[in-house]
Image (cartoon, rainbow, N blue to C red; front, side, top):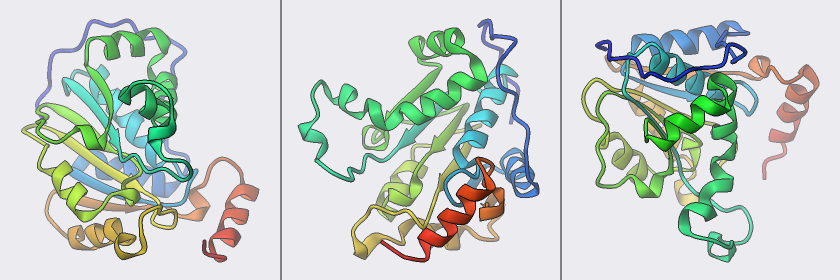
Length: 225
């Protein structure tokens, strides 16, 4: 990927620096660096989003890309989104908060605001991406386990030249109907062993929040839904 002009934005000295905490996380970082497209799956808390966002911020600060695009599908697990107050973007904002908070850790609040106000960083629902194209960008599809194959294909066709792409999700936490619950897993299987595409797996032992949390999640997942 060619080096781009660095954006003139002051970043706080206390910002979070991306460092792997497990061997699998280090492998995930290497996969992103060495490939055009990286699929990643693993349990909650393993760093799927944090690492992808951290890499995107590093690429931006180094001037290696011009934009960061982060998107995710909007899947409700309760009342429909139509019941929420506000405009369409206000309605989807709660779904984007985890990603925004992660980016603030890596950039600082002031720099993140500057980048977002100039559209250098864009956080948007997947449903808003049709018809757009992204060149010289770092593009992340978060919560990809809640995408259908059709949505993932649409996402991939939005990617232009000199771009880095990460799709991540937890195949054990899917909110889709039964007939398409394995869409992300099928896409991962199709991408295995393809040139310039990596598939990275994070495990329960990569959960860095706490050992107890990982053990409990492993037990609960065995119960199903």
